[in-house]
Image (cartoon, rainbow, N blue to C red; front, top):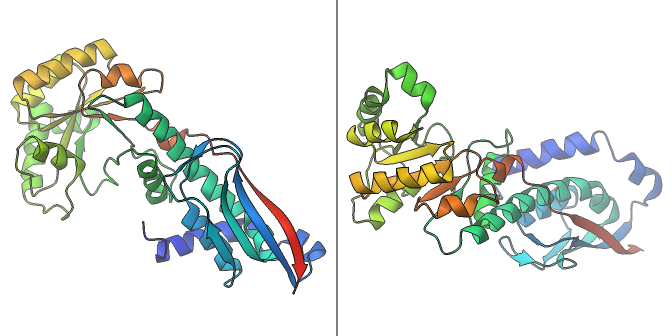
Length: 309
């Protein structure tokens, strides 16, 4: 994650403009210009850190000379009461930036924390948890970063870096085979990014050469569609909205027909049922809840000392 990018800077400026507006009138009314504060960011509940760099950058936008000491790093599992950072700088800047910084940090740490809980539930299985495109508009890169900090993996970043044939694409294309045939034709003409995708990584680990074109995945809803997809050359299938027992049969069938196929399960994956789905032998479980339903981490910023300089 490039925290010094123009995109991150613009995001911070928009967030501060939304909150501070024409000026923090409470600070203007009560805090002397020369006041300097020492503050701490504290975890009020166990969490996994994500977003400390952007929190720091919020304060730097308001006070270029602010000193921020990070006492944890993104990806750390921290206990209730632990200090995540100490801040020394202009009191007005710290107070004006507090909510924006904590909004970023709480949201991203919440995603990382929920992802970590899924990872713990899947321990000992072959399955990995990953996100979807159900992200907050404008925050996708940050939210997918938070998933990684929680130990999860990312699905495609957008519509541009992988082909995912869902039921509507299949219907418009005329069926499973026509959809796959058209996707393979298009994919072979398009060079993929240099980095290996998650699909290719799985394939490579099974001794299959990584494809140099766009990866293709197709959604299937039952054994009939699964057989049809595999017969048409599918290398990655997405079992959507299937019960664990049905998913287990489909995974077994897929492995018998094509041992190197990548199998993902999606639809209604929760902490309560994730283990059952993982034990089917699938490679991935995907959940939109990681990004659209993760509760914000509970954080607090406390000012200990205020001095005049």
